[in-house]
Image 1 (cartoon, rainbow, N blue to C red):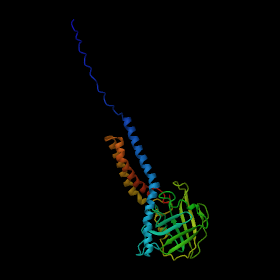
Image 2: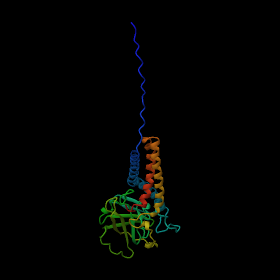
Image 3: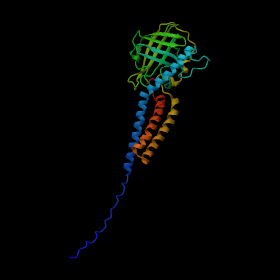
Image 4: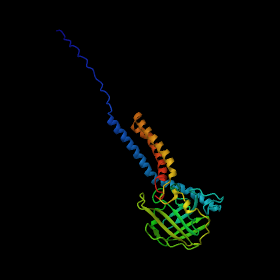
Length: 306
């Protein structure tokens, strides 16, 4: 029997499918999504900074200010007026007093000045008023919510509560007269040789200030002599009530430019390396730069009492 040999089957060519081509609309949508993600990270960094990280920063600054003030009180070099022991004007943020409100559990070092930058570290003394404990009206401002919000609860003070302030002239005790909001009558004119303390912060929702709340307190210990102070018309604009600090705009712009460059670099790395790798590399950088932007934005764009 003769074997039949089957003819060879024709070879079939396997075609490799062409790689998908990104349409312009798809590329645009991915870029938009990436930028939205970056903006979300930056926005979250801002909120976390003025809230959580700002509170930590406030505690750190307070510890350093407390150590400085304690040393100056021990050496009798703590300021008792608008100048230091050498006659030079006090630098913004220099510690001038220790403020204690027992009923609220508040213990804060007060810095000189009321600009947004100073109030990031704690309450600030309005430099066109006398220092606490002296004859006349002394004003101390503090933040309501951001950077630890040391004055968040001053609206809860009641008549008769005590406020204690320690300065280079000693320990001074005040008795709260009452809380004053917009439209409330002003306290009576201060008699000669008497002292009064006014605490103030933002009023309204924590991060949406609508006005100012003030607490007036009468000095019940002997009033100390007050040296000459800064005229009210010489107060820097950045230290007015609910003011912003225009001097922080330049560093804000510089940090914002660096943030934009980092965002562009992140998008480029994502296309060159991959999605999760780019976020592992870029996220810490965005958070670090975002924190600096938040710091400058808080000073330049947000009211100092927020």
